Amino acid sequence: MKILMVSSEAIPFAKTGGLSDMVTALSLSLAKLGHEVKIVLPRYYSIDRGTQQLVPGAMGVPMGGGEEWSAVYTAPLPGSKEKNPVQVYFIDHEIYFGRDGIYGVPSEPDFIDNPRRFSFFCRAVFQLCRKISWFPDVLHAHDWPAAMAPVYLKFAERVSGSLGGFEKTASVFTIHNLGYQGIYSKDNFDYTGLGWDVFYNAGFEDAGMLNLLKAGLYSADKLNTVSPNYAEETKTQAHGFRLDGVLRYRSADYTGILNGIDTGIWNPMKDKYISAHFSAKNMAGKAKVKEELQKEFGLPQDSSAPLVGMVTRLTGQKGVGELFGPTYGSAWAICREMNLQMVLLGSGEAWCENEVLSLASRLSNFKAVIGFDEKLSHLIEAGSDFFLMPSRYEPCGLNQMYSLAYGTLPIVRRTGGFVDTIENYNEATGGGTGFMFDNLSPVSIYNTVGWAVWAWYNCREHIEAMRTRAMKLDFSWEKSAAKYVELYDDARTAVFGKTGNSGSGTAASDIFS
Ligand code: ADP
Image (cartoon, rainbow, N blue to C red; front, side, top):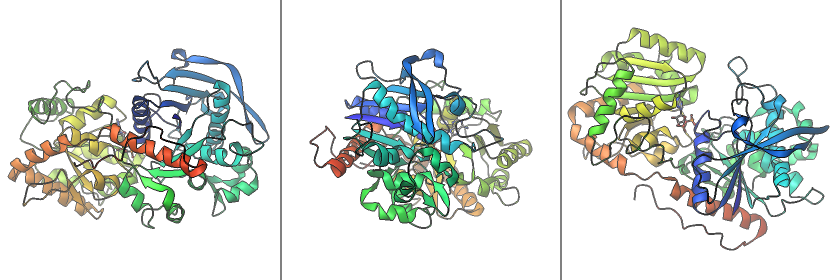
């Protein structure tokens, strides 16, 4: 199959979160299965044009009231095989993308022209295909910045009277986080070049505003999100961010497919960022990495103290209010009252960055680095004993899968993808792979960290068994990629009828098997 990924992020070119890891890993896995995959990204300022090839000739993109002109650059995706490379195309538009920041900068976290930037980007995707004379069987769009792509496909490209080429293209849209929807003034709508009938028919309308994600959810042929449990949760009012009704309406076309992890990068046996390697059979290296981590953060190199790690965006979704809230957060009590060490790497909301730094200055067993640091994130995943993620909601969550792979037991709230990937500790049998709580509150976090620390000191054999169990779980992308192939087939069948076998595998077995 020919598959075009439309995304605002893909490692190593642009990353703010898990979406970026997923797009790259899924593309590589699909290529390994023999599919022809291309990715299209904006050419942000930080992406060096010097290492890319210019696709000759400027490209005109029809937008409301005229035409935008852009250049196109291309490069193979690092890690892809020469035989069947994943080619990445970059839409280069100086006014929209020639600036710092992907969605915004600290002084303007959501650029005022984001609806224009990303509408243009999505429309450019179609012109790009014409330019390179390559038309996908499936257009796979990710999150609100790419939500206009299935809308354009359905209402402007796969219709009679269009410039043609997309008559046989189906669309799949993946929700990575329903909390971000791209809601803007409807004054921006004229710029999309679509008629106002489409504003209503495609579901843009949202309480007098323009909702890009909502239109994508109405327009794509098939929808999915990144874990089965989150797919169910998002159909409820509690987790639906006001779009639960839309998702219930589309439930026949809406599924959950668990993300995998890139086991070439996140692998305790060959991780290039850590100085010692280890496996479920030989854990000696983990003790060394723990020492390295303690040294890095200036903590006493004490193997007996349980080390709790965190790598996170410092934003409400991640439960940081309940953990670091100045008057009520439980981090202070956890570190003061429990015999443990804690390290954090993260960046995000200013109040939280300040609070974290303030705590670190007052507590000898809590250390923090504010910033984004790939190497340090590997060191924390590998060297910690526990990994804390008290998320309010978690569509899939990658960090808990990384930590399981490194025998670092997650402490999490029972929500979203955590339910699909972690089995709660059972102190009677020693079963499980992590520690879970239900209500997001400072006291629940306190109690559950306390429970893990208790097990560390009192049931050490349980901890060792849980580690082994966690490290044996299979989160590789192969299974999930096969499920995406099925979804692509379903999308094509839904629009065009039976298309014949495109080589998808059978349903992947449960990760715990
Ligand atoms: P989300 O996408 O909601 O942020 P995930 O757990 O799905 O959460 O993915 C987060 C990804 O971003 C992981 O790969 C994680 O290691 C990485 N990450 C988050 N914050 C940082 C940071 N400060 N430094 C390095 N990596 C980070």
